Length: 242
Length: 242
Image 1 (tube, rainbow over the protein chains, first blue to last red):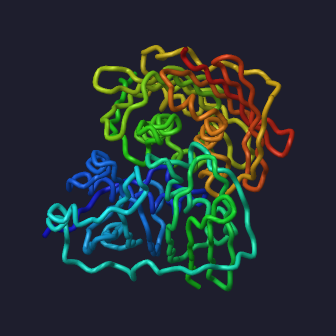
Image 2 (tube, each protein chain N blue to C red):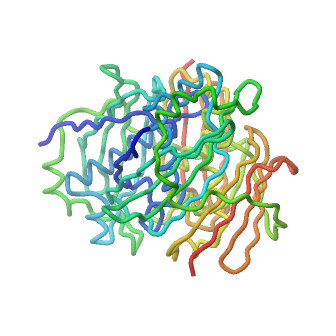
C-alpha cells in the first residue's frame, strides 16, 4: 500500500485562456502530466513499458471543475491509484488551491502493445501495482459510458504533426481542445462549474481526417469525434452547472 | 546591471513529439515561458503592465536548434535582456543540456496599449529596465526582417478558442504549430539542426479565418500567415541544415 502523492504547480501564463484562468485542457494537462510523472516514479511509466513495446492509453476520463485557477496561482495536484484489473487501472486526481478542492478527476487506463495495437493483460505488473495502490475512494463518480449521438452540427479537419504524441496518435488534450473549440465561447467565459465525461474508443493517426459532431440540450452538450467518416474515435459529454 | 538568470526544466511527456524529442514549439514554449517568469520576477511582467492596460507583444524571434532534448532530459534555459529602446526590447535565450548549448534564441518585444492597440514608448520602464540589463551579446544573429513571398501552397481554417491567449489574440506558439504542421513530417523526423526566423505583423482575433501560405526552395521554407484574405499576420523562414 502507498499514500497519496502531491505535486505542486504554479499556473503559468501559457496555461491560461483569454479569461486569465487556466483553460479546461490545461487543467486536464496538469492531471495527465502528474499521472505520467507518478507512474514514472513508481516504476511503471511509459519509458519502462516502452522496453516491452507497451504503452499507456487513456480509455475514459471524468473531470469536475468547480473553479479554474488563475494565472500564478500555486496549486497542488494529488494523485493515487485505487483499482486495477486485467484490462483497466483507475487513477484519481484532486486539484487544490490551499485547502479548497477546485477540481477532481477519475481516469481509466489500459495498456497497449504498440506492435499489435492490442490491449495487454495488466496482471503482468501486479507486484509493482499492488505496492502503488492507495485505499482512498475516487473523489467523483467514475467516467460514464457514453452512447452514440445524432449530431446536429459538425466540422472536419486533417490530423497534423502538432496533434500527435509519442504514441503517434492524436493526443488526448487535442480532443479536449477540439471539443471546447466547438462550444459557444460565452459558455467557457461564464463557466461556474462543469463536469466532462469522455470515452476514447479508437486512435486517430497522422493524415486521417477528423470530424467533430455535436448536439446540445439545455446545459448538456454531447460530442462524437470520428475519423475518415466512419471510425468512431471518441465520445464526450459536458454538463454545465446552472 | 544584472546577471544572466537560469531556469531548470525537465522535458515532460506532454512536450515531446512522436520522435520522443521536445517539439520545436515546446522548445520555443520553454523560452517564452522563461521570458514571462523572468519579466515577472524583475518587476515588468504582464501583471504589472496590465495595471496600465499595457501588455508585452513579441514582434520578432529567431531560434537556432541544434539538438532537440529528449523526454525526461534535465535542461536549463538561460535568459537575459541586453538591449532596449523606445519601441523594442531584446531578450536572449540559451538552452543547455549539461554544458552543451543545444538551442539559442533572440526575441524582440514591444509594449502594446490594450485599449488603443498602439505601441507604447518603453522609456516609461527605463529605471526598471536599466537594472535588468546584462552586458552579454546575443547568442545568435538577430531575427531577420522577412519580405513578402509568393506562396505555392496554402490552407485555411478559423481562429478558435484554444488558439487565443490572455491578449485575446492568436498565441505565438500556435503560429509555430501552424507553420510546422505545413512541413513534410519527414523533415521534422530527420531534423539535425535548423534556424527559424519569424516576424509578427498584426494580431488575429477570435472568429477570423487564417490562411497559411508556403513555398520552398532546397532546404529553405518560407511562410506567410494572413487573416480574412488580406491582413498580413506573420512571416516566417526555416532553414534546415544539410
